[in-house]
Length: 73
Image 1 (cartoon, rainbow, N blue to C red):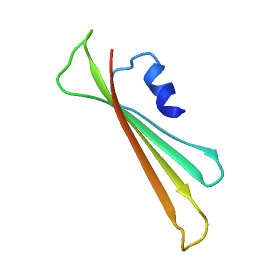
Image 2 (image 1 turned 90 degrees about the vertical axis):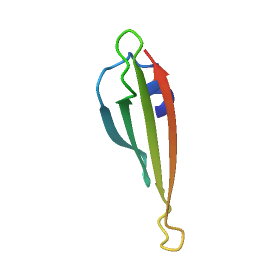
Image 3 (image 1 turned 90 degrees about the horizontal axis):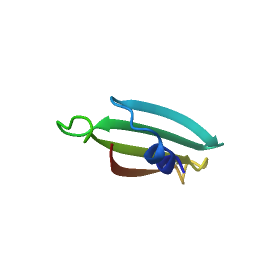
Image 4 (image 1 turned 135 degrees about the horizontal axis):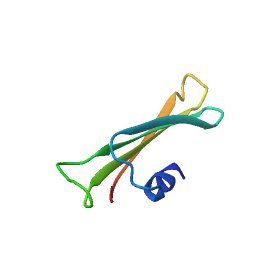
């Protein structure tokens, strides 16, 4: 869900980072970083979303999922 929101928002130059907790035990962090020496109106950005699920039990531990994509201006 967060990946789609970030891909569809207006193109913002420069790094954008954030975190949230959509549900108990789940933490998301994301970043948008400029990619390469691109300039307007052809800028590229890399979007990365990391989802961490803390399963509570020590034996199960946490699980991380990393999604990465690029978008053009």
